[in-house]
Length: 472
Ligand code: GDG
Image 1 (cartoon, helix red, strand yellow):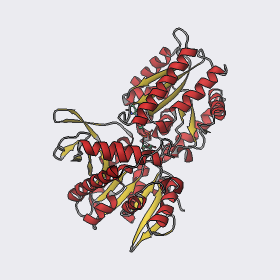
Image 2 (tube, helix red, strand yellow):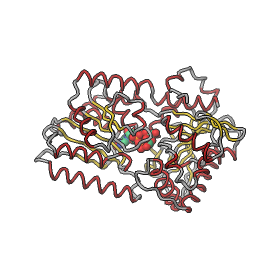
Image 3 (cartoon, rainbow, N blue to C red):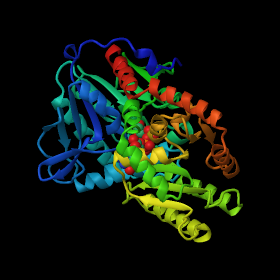
Image 4 (cartoon, rainbow, N blue to C red):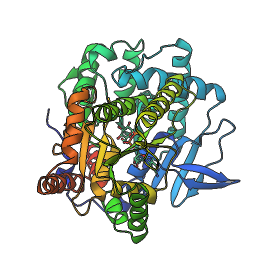
């Protein structure tokens, strides 16, 4: 299948005024309530990815405000038109925590935890998707482009097309699309495929996700065609692999900010000048935090690493805490950290620093600067922006990235030290190699990694997607 490379789409864009608006439909709004009637931009993968594009194009965002009361009336926040969709407590339970995060999320991530399927969750998923589709149909004007995001809203493209056949509709899945062995489990697989096939363009993080989708569409939804173009009746749907990226410039600039540099120096001193192994993840079972701790513990137990030389810093951002698998993961992680420190810490020298909190963007960049080795080792991940952010902050070309083969990012960041996080020996060996990489080798690797991310930044990604959509 021809892979659309974001870098191939560098042609000058037509002036903004000649185009319609861009309507983003996503589960969450890009703003959080910061007090009575006050809103602030919220951090997170999708928001950081789309912010720069929406700033350059008249943008509308349709999404949930995170509450369970009546939805606030539409409003404008920093030039972005916000259209909140209301969810009831029952919707949050069944559509969000249930169908989205206990059925689809684990199923699409290799069934690392067993997905549960309940008809009542599915019914609420359909109703809620219908509500998002209606909201988008109300807001959209003729000529606007609609860009629907992620696994929560897979039925929206078809529902929206039924309401508004005049619109161009695109869909991007941020998480992996699973192979048949897993996708076939889904009791509502045909409905999900037909939902997605309502779009003009359906795009994924990787080639294999795109292929999985096309195959499933042919097998279970009566579609015909190739991997790159599937036809349902008279309509053709473009299927693409368009890996998401970051705002390289933002992180590159942040890394040179004197405040960030000062903060990094202070963190390094506080860590006792030891070599730093860093990880930053949502506290999610897909991120492989337990496997990583196990690998580190194994190196300590075998005396291959000592607390005088190295320290591991795990920043874990609280996530989906009402879902039982997440509570369990947290307990396991905290148990492991306690066990490792119990066995290996010395006065003034812990083996693992564990921070369960979210950091400001500046502090995050400061930690990236401190990290001699960055460990990004999910068991399965659509892309993983943290890996790209780390690379973007390494202006002096120092540092090493240890990256899981199971992150979408591994397809592009080939010069990272790639590992299978379940292979404790291989993983440990890669970490030791990262700690002792000759500086010229490390610099060459980092230079190439930085070039990859600089060339394929979030602007290229969005431009590539919108060009596909406009040309469809
Ligand atoms: C999904 C897919 C895909 C993290 N900690 C803090 C913080 N972050 C920011 C990071 C990064 C984002 O959150 C996390 O993005 P990831 O890509 O790592 O992961 P998911 O949340 O699982 O996102 C994933 C992504 O969608 C985009 O398509 O890559 O595969 O699972 O930007 O910097 N930000 C701040 N403080 C923190 O403590 N401010």
